[in-house]
Image 1: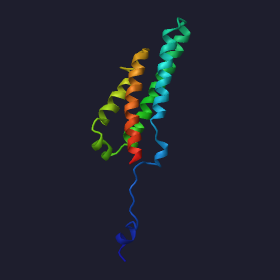
Image 2 (image 1 turned 135 degrees about the vertical axis):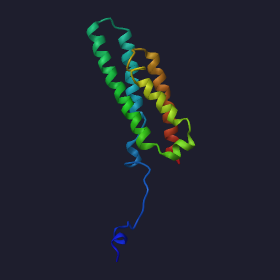
Image 3 (image 1 turned 120 degrees about the horizontal axis):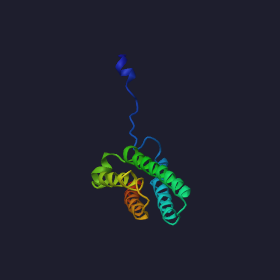
Image 4 (image 1 turned 90 degrees about the vertical axis):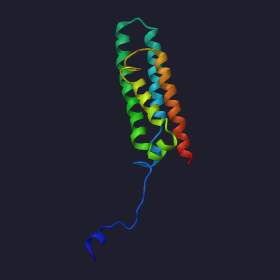
Length: 134
């Protein structure tokens, strides 16, 4: 036998995800974005400088988590066939991560910006669950 033939896999498989799909869920990003919105509302309603400083620190941490969870979905869960079927998907992720970033929820304490972020995450979530049906 030739060595290349011995090294050739006997079974070829393809995987949709890095791990079973159960580990991916846009709910993780949504929960963090809901925290951001609640923090923004509490920040706006409170004049205590120490409370406001802590609020901003926590809000920025949550915004980083939103970005992380979105990036994992964007880069690990969604594959080329999804982007072909849902051509708006790249744009949604770009808009959502920017809304979570310094120019969005991370950079301002505005509940309306957090609401926009939640709306983008919901659009992504709808597509995500559609892909899970197929």
